[in-house]
Length: 80
Image 1 (cartoon, rainbow, N blue to C red):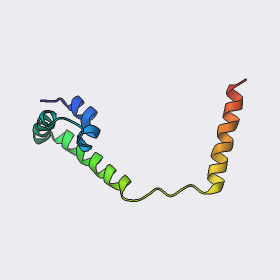
Image 2: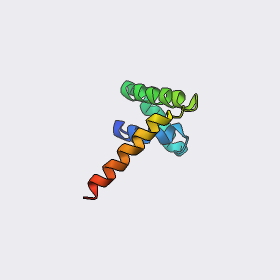
Image 3: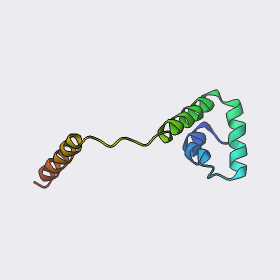
């Protein structure tokens, strides 16, 4: 059966159904017995659902311009 550390490393693969059936069954057993991992998985599911529910809004042009300007000024400082 996977450990809590294993579970935290496999959470994304689990949610994407990218783990083998054997691993998935072991993870289910672990989730049945570990409240902390259940909470962590529920939080991850909720986060994925929220992030996937709508397209991100693009930044305003002034914000984009200031980020690009700051990035460019940082590049010139590191070249010195």
